Image (cartoon, rainbow, N blue to C red; front, side):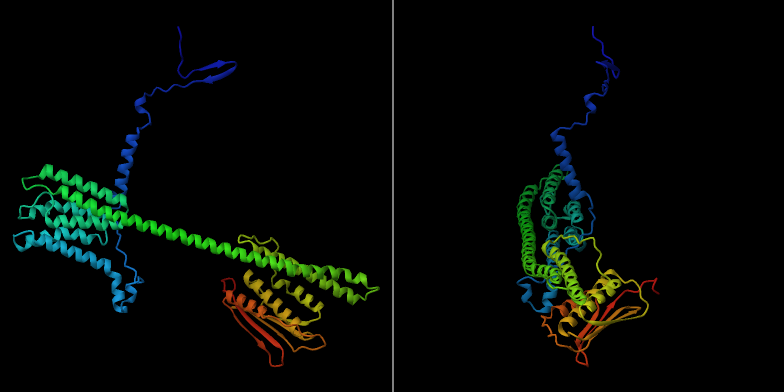
Length: 457
């Protein structure tokens, strides 16, 4: 005789195991049949399409006025053409009203109600489309009760036209599944009305189901075609953007390759030659050694800057190095560098010196650097003056140099330096002027605005 213990432990080869047996029967299992899951999914779709947010406010948008036909209209008519969808719905509601009012030979109030009840849901589609469908179904028995003709059940002529118009307008503004639900509920209501309210006048449920199926099928096909066209357009747009990015990246890579092959090669040669030159001259003077050292140092710095620029040009997702960017605090080192290159330069600072935003500091440093480089190239032997003015609303910069002197020939330029300075100033919403000075030299004046903080005030 075998005995079992529920939930008790026992030992097998020194290992204690605990077995737990569920006392719940299969009736409490969480397993559901595929049919049950399908039914739940169907009801969930009905709830999402026609039961949730029934009274949601969804106004009909105005039509675009950039179409091929509307574009040729006069300005006055073109502005009014934007309301064409609204005018079409109002005209359709008016037609339903006339059809409903003509379907009775009673008094005027009865005729007005017979036309107004089916026409009101048509107008309601302009702002609340889902609520308009339910309203159209709700007014159908009342319109039938007001009719004095021997109309078939459950729709009179006006109610038939109104409900068909409502389903068409709602399906144009919703997804195809909503149109299918409206068609099913319309058929269910028609069968219910025939069973409960039916009489000997006949039934028009079958014509309603057939006509509405044809209309909703056409609308659904048009919707699917429109959505497919929009998806294709979106995919083409994304493809064009990706192609443009790829082309741009290829062009940038080509430029980077050319820069590397030309500039980097020659700068490397300059650095190597400058380092080896003192050893080729017997007992070189200290001034010559210092000059070659400055040349090599500038060549190495230029190579480092070139590598950073090439990294930006080559890759779209390039990450900047951890080394800090130069600021106005490094300006003295820049001035010492250009002094070693033979440029006499003076710095004048006015106002309360303070730390400025990083973008302003970097741009100011680069502007001074470029202006002094221009002085070295275009006005050799001239003296330069750098003025920095710290004011409450920003930073003023003025770099001025005199006319060229000495025997060194000026080096021509392409004008990219001035363009680069203007781009930096424009990026910071600043102002810049550059041009010859009265004494034959050149002057660059820049103002970079800086937002005033509470601490500054």
